[in-house]
Amino acid sequence: MKSMILAVGCWLSICSVAVASPDDRPPNILFFIVDDLGWQDTSLRLHAQGPPHRDAYRTPQLERLAAEGITFTDAYASSPVCTPTRTSVMTGRSPQQNQISYWILHKDRDTGGPREGTTPPSWNVNGLQPDDVTLPRLLQKGGYLTIHAGKAHLGAKGTPGENPQNLGFDINIAGHAAGGPADYRGGRSFAKDPAKPGQSVWDIPGLEKYHGQQIYLTEALALESVAAIEQAHRQKKPFFLHFSPYAVHAPIIANERWLDHYSQLPKKEAAYATMIETVDRALGTLREALEQLQILDNTVIVFTSDNGGLSAHARNGPAHTHNHPLASGKGSALEGGTRIPLVIRWPGTVKAGRRSDIPVISHDHFPTLLEIAGVRCPREHDATVEGVSLVSLLQGKDHSVDPQRALFWHMPHFWGPRGPGIQPFSSIRKGPWKLIYYHHPQPQRVLFHLGQDVGEKTDMAAQQPQIRDQLSQLLGQHLRAVKAGLPRRNGTTIPYPDRMAESTKKPN
Ligand code: CA
Image (cartoon, rainbow, N blue to C red; front, side, top):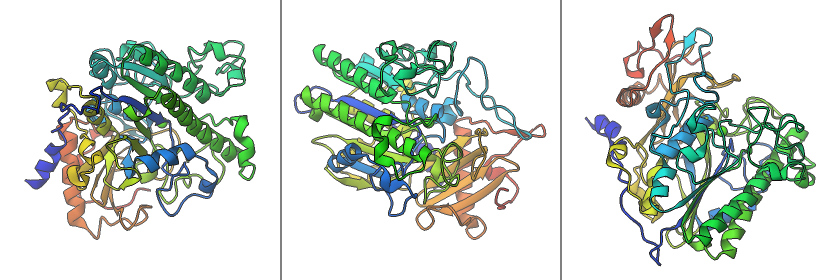
């Protein structure tokens, strides 16, 4: 019964209580979501151990934000890849409920189809569309000027959802269907072929005025965002800025301005470090604009990522080690795939320099930001929201979010590269325990105690059959509740994790 309550509890979300700022105007919201930024990709310390190049990273703006706000050490992306996490932020629902369980690109085309004898369930390959209830749409109706800047990747090319303005954003700066840029350099028109910008699906739209200039994409997005913030200020409207700088997603291309800071690193890693520094400097640019407009202290700033750090390819050094001590990286069921940085600055509410190890997940931002804005969620949608509001936690009530709350992931698709934990899976974290249910090559469960083994090296499934079965049951109940599909092998759909024959073998 207790497990049933836990499984159902995630559905009960309240996003209706207004939080008034001292002058009774709702706060501005800067939601800064970096692409593929790993848990260990900054100079903000989240763990005593780290990968070899961590000490070289320069993110003083993030460190300052953390010193003034709250840092979450156990924050998670809703998915180990882009679109599912991003659409979960927009809706407050898990990727498995949205049925957006993989990344999107072209209308009606499946980017995550059958492989190695395993066929994924059908899913929403077109992503979000205008009829969907979204965070920016609700904030827009609540009087906010809603601004999208950078990577959108929320709806497929050839559908209305490819344009963020069809999803509730008043202003769209350079966002479209694609999840990565052809090029980061203005000197190359942010395009595959600088002579023909706009020809490739990866070419960045809408920044023509920077073509031919020595400017990095992240920098151009920050400048355009400042102009949009100034517009909101002139209109005397609160703003919601969804700042999504494409970086640090591949292609890994240096911002040459900062390369001399990283001469000690191998070439690819030096380039990657400049991308991180440029993101941090963009945070600084936005902060400076807020200071100049004297609205910094009436602005909530959320800094996070959309999935774990890239480690399977395109990097110097051994693959799958760049998020150490976390195992693996982007695309993986293991912690490196989903654990991400999260810092929130909310002056007058969040006590400076706080840290929290309460597990939280990307779809929590939806009810949190609506509550901060004092904007009501329509009842019908609210009944489906799985995220919980973090407002009480931010106000100082540590246990207002249950540290034993179960978090769930479900990606029944292969990601491109292979590596540890990179295969179709469902998983659950509850307290210190995490169970992964691999769908391929045959259904298999592994169990880790993250408190003692954050690197997920020791499978405890055989030693702890009771915990394994309890978590399997919670995971099965959740997947059935949200109608999550499972893959087929040899014409048969694999069983839910609590309805499989005994198997505790590790995946090959
Ligand atoms: Ca991503």
